[in-house]
Length: 384
Ligand SMILES: Cc1cc2nc3c(=O)[nH]c(=O)nc-3n(C[C@H](O)[C@H](O)[C@H](O)COP(=O)(O)OP(=O)(O)OC[C@H]3O[C@@H](n4cnc5c(N)ncnc54)[C@H](O)[C@@H]3O)c2cc1C
Image 1 (cartoon, rainbow, N blue to C red):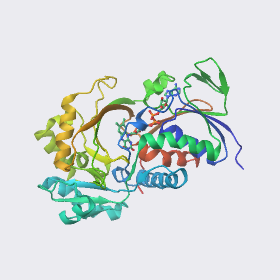
Image 2 (spheres, helix red, strand yellow; image 1 turned 90 degrees about the horizontal axis):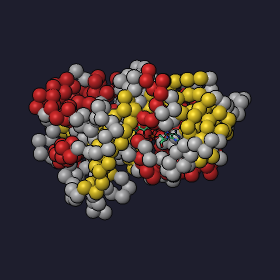
Image 3 (cartoon, rainbow, N blue to C red; image 1 turned 120 degrees about the vertical axis):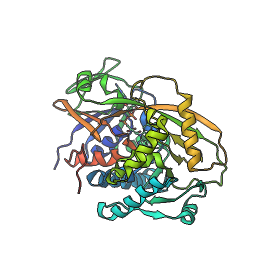
Image 4 (cartoon, protein in one colour; image 1 turned 180 degrees about the vertical axis):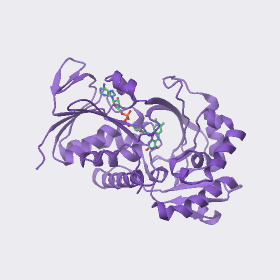
């Protein structure tokens, strides 16, 4: 039988919560420290998309599907709101349609569950679709919609009740030296194992590891549109040409290059600002859209209006909303590594830094944490 250990976790975002859950279900005694009164980082600032279809085929896609199952388990057991809405990639250009057709033909061999839809079937899935110049769509049933602030605030309560995980909010950790972590009050607490799940901010505690990690910080702009009428539903998550040019699953398609080249030559601002437009609908009915990617000024607090306008312009190409009023604008920062889905590092025995470096932490974290606690440390894809 595994020895029961005292596990200390720093950070109550999705990565910290995933490790807390995986460790606690194995019988370990888990304590989580979060510097804010609630987790306010990337984990509550996203689209709420669990998006396995965007993962490269092989181990990462399988891990994404495992995460999906774990989210559904939480829906059942913790009562968090989840809409198993699936996703539509809409093709409004011929070259986008070629990619979707190529992807659909490769999908059975690569292990993806998805199929092509014609206009009539698309409308049945989402009445909001803009059908002007619409060639067709790729339907995938595997995507989930979560309401991230709701989920991130509810999971700690459930972990506390179910596994006796202890949470200390408003508790900043200022130093880690195994076996102890030190709080800003000066208090020191010992643990057998310490996990650093502090998101893009891990450089504060481990500046030297961060410097050598090749991780960059990225700022993303987001918009909430609503309220939408009560009876109106977006249906599946919506994506379009910018996603077809951007996501790794489509790298399996030779035809993707044409879409990339068209955007680069005809609409270079989408590349300049790293704009990539998707839409989801949360439990209040609001539509969440974004985003952009700024690696040069990740800590700039001000949003760029031109980016928001380009996002809205592209969204209108994809869907027609009954209410176009902007309710909120915000930005978030995540950590990004060119090659790694997550960065794992042991600065000393008993201390593990776990950093989600793919921009897909909501999709991957439960599956990656489970794999870790099974002894399978996944940082890159393995086809299979
Ligand atoms: C705008 C945006 C949209 C995104 N959309 C999606 C999406 O739809 N689907 C998807 O799969 N992924 C998405 N992502 C990526 C995903 O949100 C992130 O990968 C994930 O949330 C990272 O989780 P985390 O726990 O590492 O970081 P965080 O959520 O930032 O959590 C880290 C926590 O650590 C705490 N902390 C830091 N330092 C200390 C300290 N010294 N002491 C105590 N606590 C500390 C922070 O307060 C914070 O709460 C998006 C990200 C952004 C920014």
